[in-house]
Image (cartoon, rainbow, N blue to C red; front, side, top):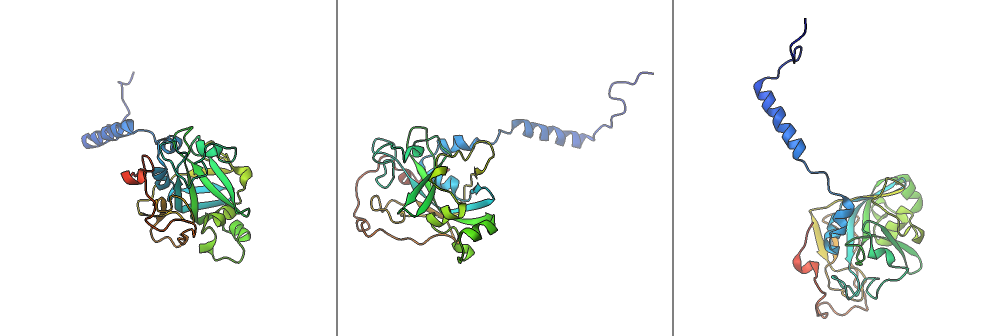
Length: 251
């Protein structure tokens, strides 16, 4: 004897059917998670800085949660001219990573001693990047302890040079894609909501521009130091183009 269609299946109660249908509609209407590279590429420097705060950069066994960053723009002809940026005078072999694509590691050497890590952002061909100033070690504590001997854990990645040392990066790593296929280096965006802003540390130009962002209360955040060669606070004037700070842009 042939079974009728659906025979042997247990019917759901009417309320359960309705809930099941609602669930299916919600699932089918969900949009896929946004592509992090596209998000960074669409961001101005300030938006990108907020996107990186609270994110995690992993290099090998070491994972750092980013708690302090600085945004940097580009050359005078671009949308975010920034006299404090390496790219202000135009593209060079050293700063080429700042011109994109977004989501690549830009490493430079400071004072011939420290390696500083940045992440490129903004549209391809337009220079901008975010300097990683401080972070909390989330994984690879034994590795970082060997790289930063004699330091308290809260100091391991406090300051851009110390952060670079904790990761073990050098200029040879500059240009690495942080958002491609999972590999030795990878970046997960954050988007901390509890960020505070202030002027950038140690810059001599655009020294009043509040493009330094940190997670409020994070003990790893570095101290502010104004360059002795910078103009007195408030002495700088003039437009910096379509300054994202004026627009108070947030991701």
